[in-house]
Length: 69
Image (cartoon, rainbow, N blue to C red):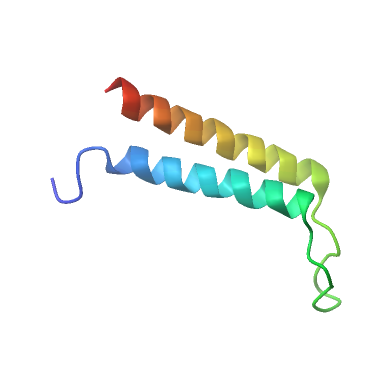
């Protein structure tokens, strides 16, 4: 296979971890200044934590898939 047999699991792990960390950091440390009127001052907390949880679930699932087989 061109990029390995576990390519999908590695991609899910990478995107899930990025989704988790990015949304969590948006809640924990919002930007210091607002860029313009089109951007929010803070990220929506509920939605960001939901997306962070989904990313964590995807990353854990991909890691379990890689470890188990």
